[in-house]
Length: 53
Image (cartoon, rainbow, N blue to C red; front, side, top):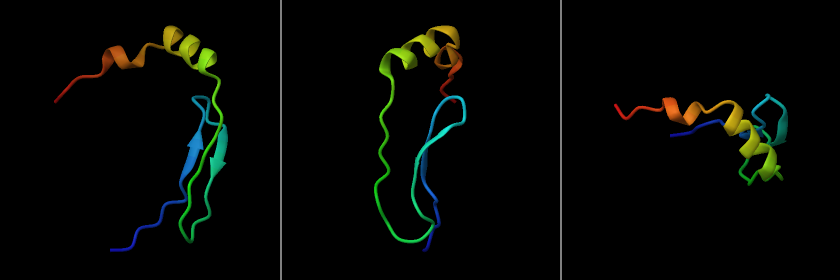
């Protein structure tokens, strides 16, 4: 089975931080602001709404 990905790392605000080409394989890496991520999770606690189905 073939799959096509165009994998990417995207910030919570939709900014593309890293991306791979559509062809071939590879690893996408990006630096994240850990403090900023924690602040965002406090403002938008989306994980509290997660339910196991």
